[in-house]
Image (cartoon, rainbow, N blue to C red; front, top):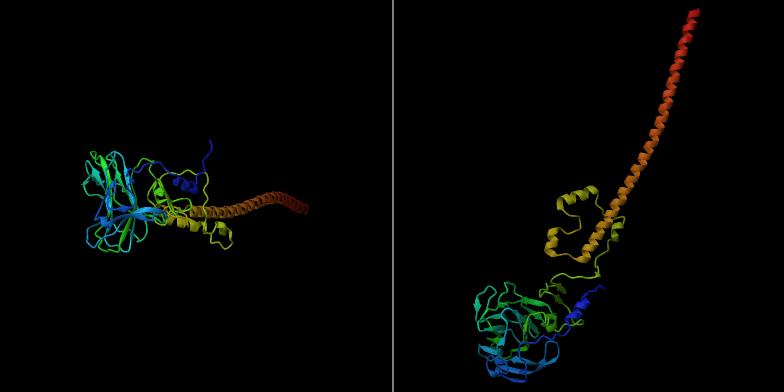
Length: 384
């Protein structure tokens, strides 16, 4: 079986593949005009609701819904859609693009209505006026994709998956509130507003409202953001959580045949420099006893808190391997010295044995000589 080489480039290409998933909202009435239109009932006065040509979030010419607030502090533009039939046991995603200009007066909204029965909080409390988000867009004159979720009635999850995505970077800048269907909820309406804005110079633009069943065939967040391999700056796979400062977040396992990490720190050839401060064995033993890990490597608690830099940890592991090589070379040298000493000791022992044998022979000869001398002296005395 051929192996599949998976790379970030392939993942990026994958998220740009078109999908056939159907938006449950009917946008046939999304044409140039004012006030309500087919499938969308206006929020506020007709003069505060205009559909006109403009520049959408992907830089394309598109029909935008424009909210132009009056001086009164009340409804200032937006809509409530017609109810769309749903299966209460399934999850649905509610989304819209929003851009606010001039000031942050008033509040921007994305919400829904449950038909047949209201939706509930994730904890199960009914809510007849549910909003995924009520606030100001983070930055004026910038498009943001607002995404909320309504969980299936049997879903026990209390995790909020909704979020606000920066249309320029693709980053999920804020989390927002999710809701849940009751078993008697039969339909769902989309609503998005500008409210309580008394600054008549303000404008809020809406684009591409959607209700999607979450079944794996819906457009991915990356697709809604319009990210391509050329424009993709940040990517999530299997998750909507992308921590600040990161370009890629994968929720789950990943299989790869080859990974290349560009290392930005010095490669550990420096270990073999004659001035490298290699710890003595005694110093190393003391450090391990005190810290519980090797010098230069993170502790278990540090890895748990900060995760692991693959390139850095490989560099550090190689550093330890090269240090181990130096310790091994030093031990080999000591072993050779001991072997040489042992050989020398063996030679000396052999020489000692020879000398000892010679000494024993001389001692025997000496004793024999003394005995002869004694006999000669005795004979000489007898002759006198």
